[in-house]
Length: 217
Image (cartoon, rainbow, N blue to C red; front, side, top):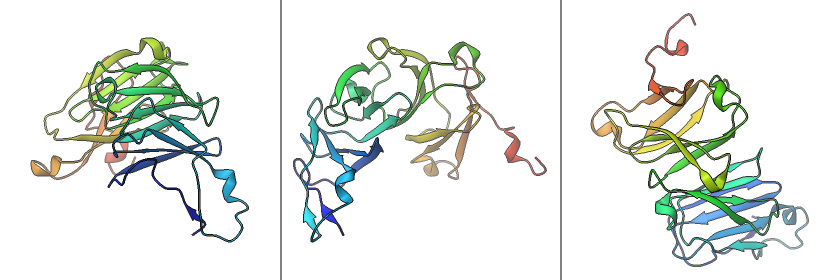
């Protein structure tokens, strides 16, 4: 072990860490924790490890948060599941790595548990070149245009029959499909990955005919 970075506040069973531009961004469900920033280049030359590190920056615009997602193409961080904006998107600019700044939010669909944000280049021609958030919101999959973070626009929010706790997802490389998992669906069905056709943001739908589901494709 090289060293230990103490919590900004108290202990918690849950933390999330994402890395961007040689910095770690750390959230926690501990009350009042906010966002810790740690410069990872400090790990390159550590005399006499292990040592106790100090954080290089801190953002106090929220207290607890469940998760943080970063769009590395835009340099924006999205804290989700926080005590702000109904638990929705808390959007930060990371251009100054140790001093994140609030640039926008999205609360319309309530609590977001996890998210993927991309500079979109997929089959929905109307939205190519925009910054798009795919948000997993407990009982829906929401697609949000966050190109202007001060005026985020909900493009769709879709539920499904077996939903119990819509947990996380990820786009396929061609951006046509969104692979989604439900944390609690095994209570009613065999646990599975839900394959959403998101080639049109206005009408995403579950696709039971995705090509990799069938032998020979």
